[in-house]
Image (cartoon, rainbow, N blue to C red; front, top):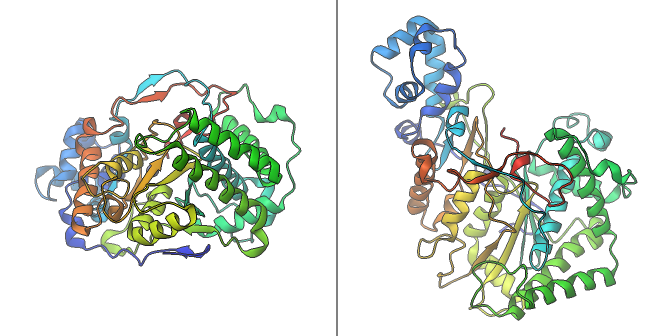
Length: 458
Ligand SMILES: [Zn+2]
């Protein structure tokens, strides 16, 4: 278990080419590469389904010869080698596969009221957006080394509170998160006009820029909060939980006292990191990085394709690998008994993407061995997200799934990851994202912290 804010990074994934070649969903890369050659007569004639079929079949047959003749051997070989880049617990969706998942378009949901445990979620979102802002916005360019300037983009950042520690991860550049927090805290409170925090422009970039400024200001309010302001927030959270407002799901049998106690401590942990720890190297901050990936010519990624494991799954993977140690530490810090569940609030810049939401659902299923199931003898963690909304699926990225968080037994974990992958690739109607509501318009002046409407599809 990583302690302090040292980076938790696993040993590189060495993927067996055998496993990779036998994976049933090699569709992705070859399609991505070949479909750009849209002027080929053969490709024009091929329906999307047929083309995907081709990618799922062994590299022989008449279609193969047609493609070789049209595209040249090098192009075809490059596409074929790219077929092997997914393994049993990773997946790849191309743009067509992502667009094949119908989403039910709805108006932007009502403004979310952040009460009870959602107060913790809201603060986590403000920190996530602020770190993103500091890592990507030109205002902070001179805070980074020359080689880093303009080259840092975490894409997504997620945070969780576990026991008395604040956990953070990002899809990319996790090694820069601690510095980003330093920079955010050492920069004076912003004095931009409030008008800049709202925009009448529905362009997603304008909306995001306004959101960053709003959250950056709220982050500074949080970092500058007095002991009395913290106490006020804690009292409100407790009162709201007592009244049944903002109560984490699946805590029906848990007393409000046990829930409130954990929420109060979570607010204190966040406050401690932001107000006391910058000069001490953030002893209560735990940073998680995606694993590193070793790739050779035989499974190289095609141009434009990235690879990672998403932020929340980096945290969930470590939680699962060291579940008993995390649990023992958390119940000691929170004053809980072994039979209590440790609530794990998790939030980020965006809601969980379609695949992370699917993985988290599997992690919560009772009797299935996931890290958030409530039936383990040894530990109990209860994931809390402030909403049920499901983000978009990402295209053109190889994504590793946190198999350990799906099941402690590696073989079972990989089987469950493979099922999630296969559903997204071949049977998307079996996924939660299928026809799931998604806000159709990006309406300005929203005050909630995340929205799938703002989720960058890439
Ligand atoms: Zn995700």
